[in-house]
Image (cartoon, rainbow, N blue to C red; front, side):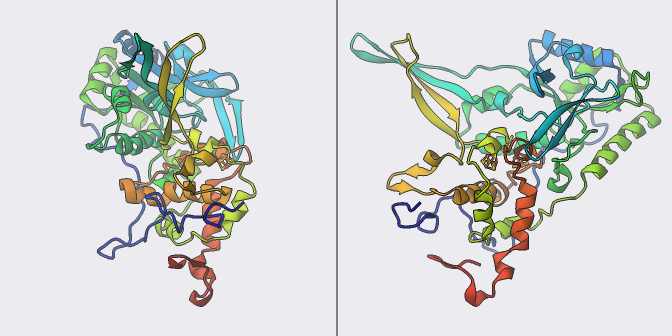
Length: 437
Ligand code: SF4
Ligand code: SF4
């Protein structure tokens, strides 16, 4: 379909800040994607040595955080998936459940043990708590011939998040850079994160979709948590079922002190280390990401964008499930039975046609231009904007894509057909800006 500029793809005429920019900085140095790192990195034993928690201690931990007035959110079997839901104790955790994930595929699987955190990731992320899918901005009502506006200050929940994976903590850091810029901090994000308490759990059962090792974000959190747990679960119902706990903040150390746990022995911390190492080995360095900033910047004309567009449904699932996607729209609602209106912020997706509608036309009328925009922003121009990659390697976009499009496969296909190496300079596709390099 042609747009008003006479082309299916107007990005070369209508550049936005989200389109690829030259891969070189002013000083000529090539920029590399920056792995998201929760700051600051926590020194081992900064808040005391590791402790041992039993399942009963984990239950007490959850109850104490709730008794402290926190809204405790953790993994819970929720219909056919594990979701992040309000929990009241360890009995709510998905004991004995794991997950099987692949391109366009998710199944709960019974484990042969009673691990509480024996799954990889929930297919939906914690994003919906810190950046809700819908948040009301104000209400307006006509009163006595005038318009009365009622502003709605963001609620200030005191969240305790139980079971955050390392990549998910990294995603929080990525979104913090977006929402908490000093010149324009987002009040909703600030209210939802200002007093949160994070209990990280190292990943011991990664999915086939995980690539946190390549992204430099996991499988063990190096910072950004109040308490980090590593679950050791040798055999079904084994007395060896315990958690090695490290405090990452004084608040975390204070909560652990209330549980009166015993110090971890060298063999117990060694077992925890082995679990993390085994997870890292299982995930592997499967995706080459160190050159992806430049690779995508120079492949705006790669034929692979049309290939993936032939499969992509433009449904936006990948953006909704991605823990770092942050786009939103503002809508006015007129609830039935209410004579006023509500203005709300709602999640938006760059795969929607109306997303790129602006005065004078639509900048991205084709699926290929929208997929290219999403992937190029995520892995390349995000670095230019926020000094960090927009991808933490969680794999959710792979699992939740209804047609099984795999971001790793697409990157490799683009590398294999790199327009900078495939075509000699004299025959490279032309753009309005000159040669596509
Ligand atoms: S792009 Fe995909 S793998 Fe990367 S953070 Fe988003 S959902 Fe996870
Ligand atoms: S890549 Fe998959 S999840 Fe994303 S918009 Fe296309 S079909 Fe939907």
